[in-house]
Structures are given as structure tokens and as C-alpha cells.
Amino acid sequence: MVKRDRGTDWLALADAVLAGAEVTRADALAMLETPDAELLSLLQAAYRIRYHHYGNRVKLNMIINAKSGLCPEDCAYCSQSVISEAPVAKYPLLNRETLLAGAAEAQARKATTYCIVMSGRRPSDREVEQVAAAVEEIRRTTNLRICCCLGLLTPAQAERLAQAGVDRYNHNLNTSQAHYANICSTHTYQDRIETVQQSRASGMSPCSGAIFGMGESLEERVEIAFALRALDVDSIPCNFLNPIPGTPLGDTPRLSPQACLKILAMMRFVNPSKEIRIAGGREVNLRSLQPLGLYAANAIFVGDYLTTDGQAPDADWAMIADLGFEIEGDGEGVAEVLSSMAR
Image (tube, rainbow, N blue to C red):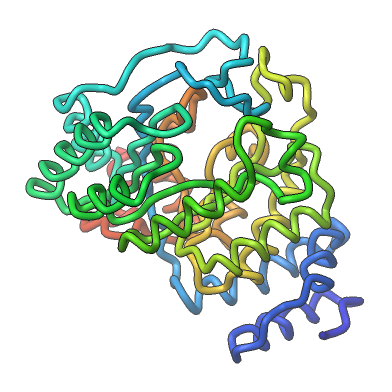
């Protein structure tokens, strides 16, 4: 473990990680406790790891809320939960034509991954079949990668989704095991672990992350990062709580931009080769420091989230161009995008 009394020590630790070393929990906690005056040094070191694995590419993902509300779970952060009083749209699973239109919109937004998300504890077999049929059509007609987030799955349901061409399955841990009972009582942390493992067993790429800012301690944030490393997930969405009035966490103070950046840097050090995605709450927590997050993370959602608004796609394209980065899979390139926007 390297000394951490100077910002340059983070670069030494980054080099050690690139040489095959793993950071310790003490290292990770020290990142979260880094004084704001040393934040840029920490980000520079995280960027060294990010650049080694991903260069300056930024992967765009688009999400569609394929089934809204109508959820029996009591997750404290969620506007769609059974205990939420937030005024959100409530509707059953969208039809095939709407899911296909969403895929076309994902392409228009320069996304390479289209994320189909449903509210609820677990999907019915009929809902799985509806999603699978839409996915098969999307895969025949586009080059999009498909991620699904439908809740808990049976082995047969997971196998059907994989057979249809679902590349990745998302099921977030959301918070640490110790803190989980404070966030949800209708299912367990272990339920989530088993769902992530089921997605891998079926042949889908496992995706799992967290929502930070729900009252967890710094040590618990570190535990989340190491739990995701132990699961060896391929993609890690880092959400920052966007407190929604009408939910139990609706009055929770937002994280500071500096705290968010330290979390992203820590996640990059602990999971150096994995896709780190800045997800929900990016705009209202990172605020004007959003671009700095991409020195640690290599992916973002583009457009709106499930029940909250996101940044306009052209603003994200411009942000990426201004950094001198490039959108993954974009034949036109961000430089050309920015030039056309200026005309």
C-alpha cells in the first residue's frame, strides 16, 4: 500500500493496479476521504487506469421504462414502489411496436446499448416472452446491444432472454449488505446476488451497481465496490440518489459533486477493467462537474431515466466533444457533431 500524503501517490497506486495489483479496502476508503484540494490528483490517477482500458471512448446507453409503477416492492428510493406517493405514470408492459420505436430512438441518440427496464418484483412468463420477441426483432434489424432489467428471474426465464439475444442483464445491488434492510424489506440483498449470478449462468453478461447517497457510510460505499468486484460483473452503473418527493428518501440531501467524483474514482480503482457508467442522478448531483466524471467512468445514460429527466442528448454529445473524447461506435465522431451544432 502506497503513502497517500501527496497527490502523486495516487499515480503510483494507479501504476501498481495496471501492473496487476489490487487496491485494499483501506486504499479505497482513503480515496473517499481525499481532501477536495487533492481531488484532481485522484481523478488524474483514475484516468490513467480508464485510458489504459478504454482510451477516450465514451459508451452511450439509452433506457426505456417499459413498465411503470404497479410495483409491490417497498424500495425507499423508488417513485414506482408500493409505498411511494410520487405522481408517476402507471402502465403495463409496452407493446412490441413501442419497444421497437425505442430502439430506433436509441440509435438516433448514438447509443450502442438499449436498456429495457420493467417495474415489479419479477416478470411473468408472458412478459418475458413479449420482451424476448421484441429483442429478437431488434437484433435482426439493428446492431444495438440489448440490456434488460426485469427483476428477479427463474432459470427458464433467464435462458429465454439469452436465447432471444439479450446481451446483458442488470440487477443492481443498490447498497451494502449491512445497509440493505434500511432501504427495502420486501426482498433481500441475497435475492439480488442470486439474480446477478443467474444472469451469468444463462450466458448473459452481468450488470450490477449501486445508488449512492442513501444514508450509507463511506465504509459501506467501499463494501459495495468490493462486493461488485467479488461478483465479477462486467458493467457497473453508479447512480446518485435523486430524492423524489413522495418517497421515504425524498428529503435526503444530495451528494456534493466532489463526493460523487471520489466515488467514481474509487470504483475505477477497485474495478479497473470494468465498464463504469454514470447513471441516474448524474445531472443533479454532479451538476457543472459532470464532465470530470468521465475521467473515471467510461459510459453514461443518454436522455431521460425511468421517472426523472436527464440531460438533452446533444448536450451530452457536446460535453464529450469538449473533453476531446469520442462516442463509442459513432461513425460521425463528436468533432463533427460539435462542428455541425455550431453552424
